[in-house]
Length: 331
Image (cartoon, rainbow, N blue to C red; front, side, top):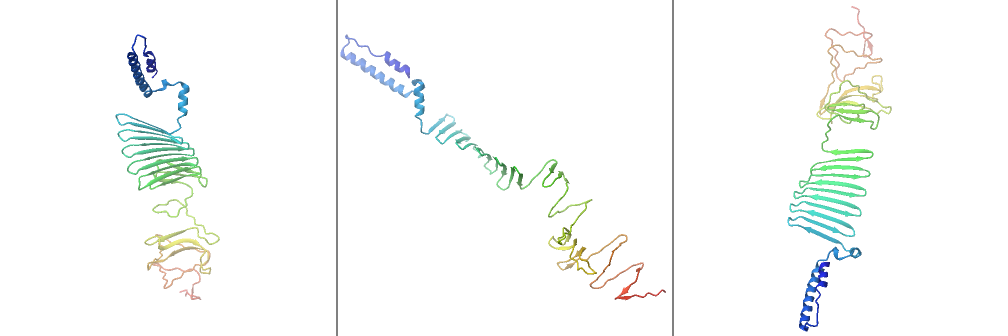
């Protein structure tokens, strides 16, 4: 230190002719010993006060190797700093196992915080992305990734997961279970219009579905379009045991025989045999039944046909039996 070196100047021994050679030698020896001790202390305790600004700058320019610094106190708190040509790292820790780390390079900045229970949060930033991640010792993980093209949010517990992807052209949602609270409205999707979901009520325009189960449809019009190429636009099917066994149905098609008894284009109501069971067809009315046709009416029975009227059977017009006109007496 400067004061110690100044003491070396002020304590320089004064020699006179009256002093003997031994006395002079003893004074010089004592001074040299004191000077040696002062030099040892000063060189071991150099600080910035020992250098001018130009000297300090010159010394700083000489530091080209990596720098490692670690500070520790009596409570086991530790701070460490690492500086290299390619990056910078800082680490703080305590006796409880809490650790904070920061790493910086030319392409990324990463921070990581953890505790003794195994919980970890990480934040990583680059020029093209930003990612945050939080996890615990039980395997629960949540993460958020953002790029210029979109954002991805995911949560998992090891056995199930949920993911939301927000893109410029749409939103992708994937989860084991999805719940909405409040009224939900959709407007102008692939076509113009809107759909509102409010509790157990859905208001919309057109619904296209493969299967609809367990519902009551009221006050609606069902339309099935038979295309010019014979494609059936829809059919009502009645099944037995499961949906693989069709016991009957109703459809509009062009599969008729094309004879005077069966036209090609028809409204076809049918039943089938399923598992050896032949399903009959019965029309029952609490009042009357009326059948009208602009052309022929054809009735056919594979075995026997029975027509019964408890109050009589009334036939109007000529009646032919096996092609012969049935003559009815006037009596």
